[in-house]
Image (cartoon, rainbow, N blue to C red):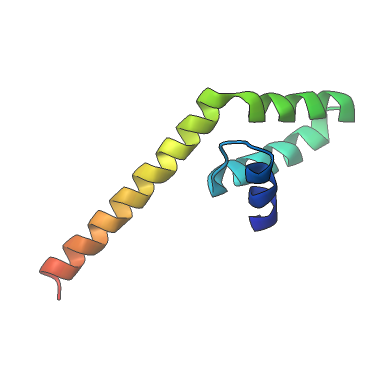
Length: 79
């Protein structure tokens, strides 16, 4: 997963770890139902969809923020 993430970032895509995970899942699903040529087009369309990639990145940031706040609250009130 890390290698796929690094490859996507190196190629200039706005790729988070979640983007790489989504890419992998989509590839596996498309691999079972579409021929290679169409699968390649669909995967490229996913990577070219800036709105989707931005949404995934936004969700990752939100989850990271929530986790940091949870830890701060625990440190402050539980310990």
